[in-house]
Image 1 (cartoon, rainbow, N blue to C red):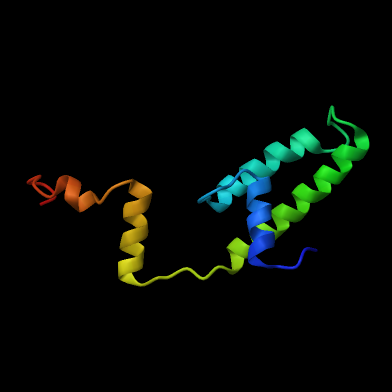
Image 2: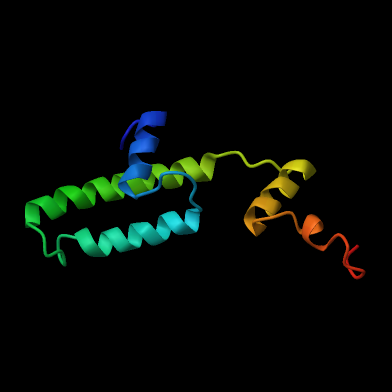
Length: 103
């Protein structure tokens, strides 16, 4: 297993094409895509190259999942509200503030 460092996490993310943010579900989806492409039993690439790449993909996935599973998530009200507004793409209250139902 690769030692956990900021560099190794960044390299694992770049291997999966993650340059900014990704959810755990997105990481899993990309892992499945790359696994189908590079698994030595089904890859159209050279068998040795596919084997090496598949090992890299598996190591990167393990590292990213471990990082995500051990990342502390805040349950403070202000952090939850900030995260929800980011997920929604905007602040819902700003969008509906003048609406008689929501305002």
